[in-house]
Amino acid sequence: MEKSTIQFTKMHGAGNDYIYVNTLLYNIKDPAKASIEWSKPHFGIGSDGLILIGEATEPDADFSMRIFNNDGSEAMMCGNGTRCVAKFLHDKGLTDKNPIRLQTLSGIKVLNLHLNADNKVETVTVDMGEPILKQPAQFGVHGGKATNWELTADGHQFIGTFVSMGNPHFVIFLDDKYELDANPDSDKELFPINHFGPILEHHDVFPQRCNIEFAQILPDGTIRMRVWERGSGITLACGTGACATAVAAKLTGRRPSESNIQMDGGTLNIKWDEATNHILMTGPAAVSFEGEIALPE
Image 1 (spheres, rainbow, N blue to C red):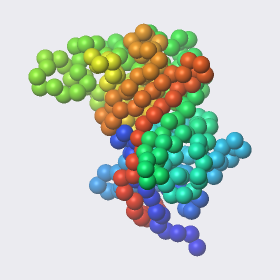
Image 2: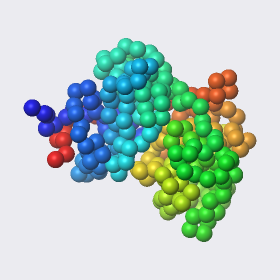
Image 3: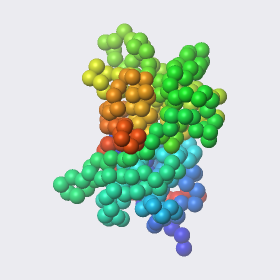
Image 4: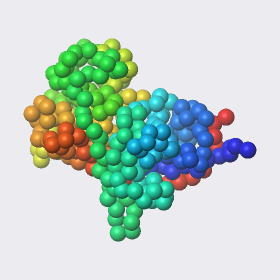
């Protein structure tokens, strides 16, 4: 007889929070519906979506992950999610491998675990692979170059950089007249992400929609970034978005090959390894709480 309830773990990487379920133990027949219902604040667990951890189907991988946004759409990749999967697998004793090779819809990601004194995962470095700077055909975008794209949204012209980290990102460095954070002592205008984020996500040039990053360089060289995620809206952090932002900063001459990306939920270190052309992302993974919930009817 199938179980009517499942055990879940709520985890976050720099505030990017998902519900994690071990599908080696539980069968989630309709993960899209489950993600929509469970992700609702007040009426569910509340999250950016649902991540299913399961067996790998590729021989070179140890485990697999599937990601569903809180609108039910399936995502290709989540950098913050991969770090939490590594912590889940190690801390629950499902593997003692380090590194862990994780199968995603964007390929196999290599996760290097950094442990604390209690032998628990504290931070994880993820080899995110090579950034794709020529627009992938599957995203249907137009152009032919990565930088200096010009898009118009509600009469406002944006210039940005398209980077794929296995999922599509459009990175916009904002003019100095804007603020990304509310500052009552500033005469600058707070940029309306809630307005322009969804318009750009659904822009005609992105028939499969796109993740949108808004960024500025701080005086100490840190990059302040806020993200409008495809299928989730504003989230506290986005690992692939942080990678794309660091790549865009390097391509446009704003930063060297290593940057700290400060998001609403925390900071990630992103390094573009020039020897391998791979992007290395290092950041935290944390458990919020665990519980039991009924499967959707």
